Image (cartoon, rainbow, N blue to C red):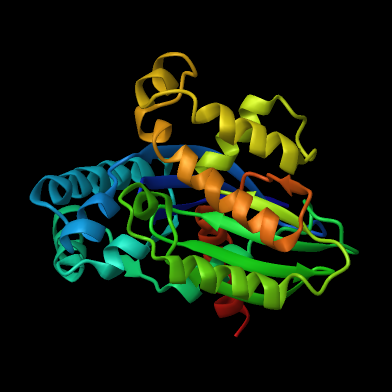
Length: 301
């Protein structure tokens, strides 16, 4: 007996807002499969408002309302049976975040959960990494966002430490990350990752996905620290405009890709990792899985 349902995840980040629709494929005697059906990304960049002015602007409030209404209609067209919307760093730090959440509920009929950094890290860490990782190895999982970055140490398939830091691409673009925050991160990585004989980094987020695509590497193959450093240095020889016209980067990617690389390279350096793996997963994937496992749990109680 084959069952296929569609679930959706809405990730309201500090840089972009995403709608992921996935097919949940269940077959008796077989493990459940999660297959991406559709992904829509809108670069609203809420963090540019919140991290500077402490509130979401009228313009971006309207853009969020329009986007959520569009997502609601897309979910209806796809016949999505369950969804979950999560907002992260920018929404939780905004003085008018609660008001915007309420307006979205009224205007688009979409309920938003504003989650804290630790819950965000937990949802991301709960993503099924087993098919991407070697169960005998140790990894530092780094999910770079616009407002924060989530770090998880995984040793032999077990999550041994996890923490969120207010170091994100939009914050870095606006020079809003203090030296002390970088030091806290370095100390945390030193305390939690350096004790292992060898560690590799797993990177997620739109920027590392783009870097991996440009590299031409086959899926499952890592990018080396040397490649990452070379690409980082190369990017800085181009102006913002040249990154768009000559490197074919989207305008909302061309500026944040450099601070994103700084975060990944710092994580690799401080953990002494020589390689970074890019499985193309993130918060939205974790949300889909949390919906599914919550449903299974409630059905068995």
